[in-house]
Length: 308
Ligand SMILES: Cc1cc2nc3c(=O)[nH]c(=O)nc-3n(C[C@H](O)[C@H](O)[C@H](O)COP(=O)(O)OP(=O)(O)OC[C@H]3O[C@@H](n4cnc5c(N)ncnc54)[C@H](O)[C@@H]3O)c2cc1C
Figure 1: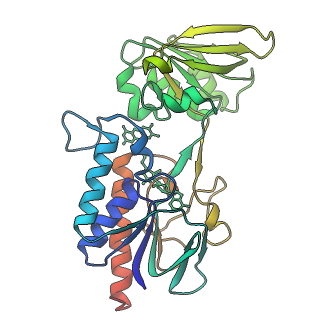
Figure 2: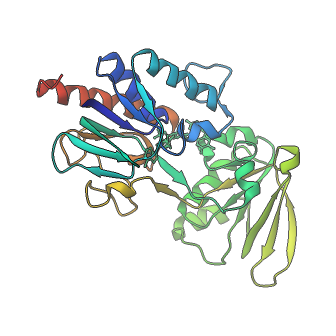
Figure 3: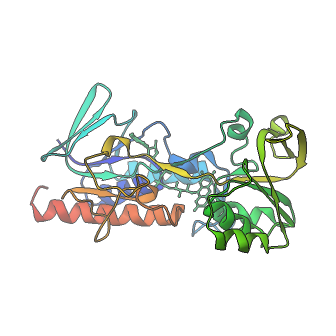
């Protein structure tokens, strides 16, 4: 029997593990398919407080993991495939293993949608990004592209125009999902140029370990072209990792978990933290902050029931 199981080992899950570990709750952390979460696949992180020269994402996450282990957190590999939250203790299944727990913290994050190109995957953190807030500062004086046609693509293009010398807004259709006000604002921005209807076919140059250009194909004329850019922001949405909680926890229309009074879900004893319940801020420090909240909430929950 576990006091606390934490689903996910990104910054939310690891911060929850540090706090519940230091509260002597001996948390069990389930890594999932992406141990360390999104920071494990990026390079330099310059906005996490405490690192004046920045820190590599994998190093930051590795430090958090060691810190959690130091306070007794146990890590298990494997992804959660089912949960029974109908009564306590909750049952958490990862493949053939089932774990029982008095409290549960869900920190399974949200995965950015990608275009599906091999080159895109290889260049994430090396010029390809899914987060303008995180990586905009690296684009000072450069020509870059934002891919997408919704409000977030427009928002990111406008934000990035503060740093970049030129922003190409690349979209596969002539019509946009974005609201009219956002489209108008973006069109009025002199630094932003719309490129439609074009499909991204390739991002180069993987062999040089950085973005130099992208190959585009016009969806109407079928003509291919090369666009020299040094950065590409993919802004086509995120998918919260909440499939196993469908019908069991409250979610919004996009599948993000709904929390109340801090980190509480609708089921007493089940808490949620990080990007899995936050489609707005999506930052390492906010995920870590909400991991701390979930840990304190779980600890109070267990204490009130004298479970530990
Ligand atoms: C390329 C990139 C660069 C970024 N750069 C920055 C930056 O510079 N600064 C910044 O503040 N933020 C940055 N971010 C955003 C930041 O990484 C996220 O906000 C943060 O990682 C969210 O933490 P999280 O713990 O909520 O989720 P995640 O980091 O997404 O972690 C989710 C965890 O849940 C696990 N999981 C998922 N499903 C299951 C399952 N079924 N069973 C078990 N485990 C599961 C995963 O394996 C993973 O360990 C960046 C993101 C990306 C993608």
